[in-house]
Length: 95
Image 1: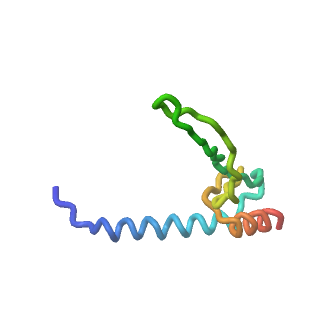
Image 2: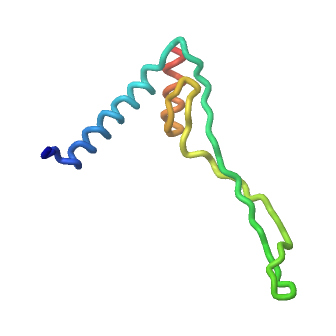
């Protein structure tokens, strides 16, 4: 079976349809759904070591401040929103 479809064109079309679906979900939220925004940040820990008898031994542990989240999600299922999109989504849900 010979498949003559252009994989790049297929991928491009899929990305465009997903982007349009994402934009619609942000701008036209389901009025019956819960709309509470959430985001996840990953905490980092800085570890410092010393050399003791030829071995690395942990000597200090410090939690590093987490930055601002880059992507936001809504309880209604819309994922991957920027801060501006999440704000727009909540405003649209209140209308």
